Length: 435
Image (cartoon, rainbow, N blue to C red; front, side, top):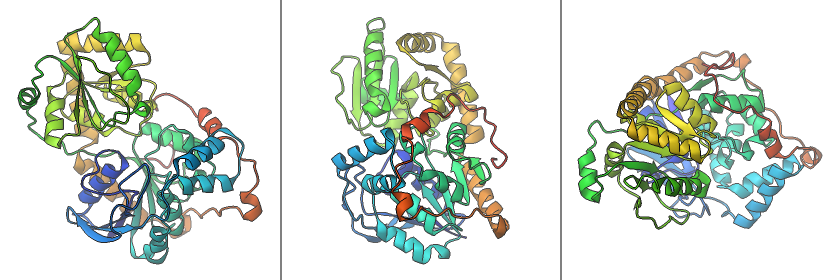
């Protein structure tokens, strides 16, 4: 079996998000199939500038074919187009222009798929909202399998993505909440889909004492791992923690990740920057718990890593995915305001038996759903299912409207569409086509 993994950026040094997700899947499917990665020649997700050489290279033993980006992102243009399609009545043409403006726009990659897509058994596309996934899936309808990595954000309500969700061979969802969102916005229940998520490379013997010796931190710690960004809820986290620190002067908030916003100067906030995987897992093992303040997630790999290490999680309850994961795992608490944050944090820190029970539940949940043999088997089972499928039952590709149709300003604001979708944790039960 020959597979193409198609993703917006790819590299051994890209940590987090869909890019790391794609690399993990590519590397773990490689023992079972002939895997090739198709991606762009950029690493900068802000500008999408071509900072790598187009062509083929090997990354951890997998061939990676890079294609140039035809235009860098203009932040002002993208911002104006986003305000228009998210907040105003607009046209299909405006959405397609938004997609080009968002980037990374690589017609060369799509051209390669148009010419050579039939040479692959399946093309696994990551991240529904990008140019390569939208146009690439349209030119490979018989091979396209989508890993949408969708969150509850306005882009999900764009009209162009409904046909995309209905037109692929299958979807590999990150969570039950993601599946419910996509089915709610697109009505794609008949398309085969499975909640699969992703495994993680968690060491069996992290060394918390090594972390304490390296950093000099010996008291209780609350850890955050990820991009330090207001869009990830970090502004609210800093506010809540500083208020809590007035009543608990022993707790330290440890931050791991690159900052996109200013970090408060506070004696109990310690920023370690970008660290190695060894240092990250040592720090997580040394912490009492992990905090996830994000409002929007499609899965949260670091949450799964904390549970694999037996650490409880304190999550933003306004994120449906995180709330649902905590409910299903019984391995974390969640909050929606400062009072709930403070009380939940205090209980986890002071009730050792509760903390240990939550951590043990997290380890069981991870072992049951997110070990790599489980993840690999779900992908391989889906590929087997699709290969046995009667071609007559495959969904027909829905055409993009013609010149006049693309220009009719009759499409509702995408934010309004998303606001009407159900909220809260999903039940874990899928539609008729889900597994």
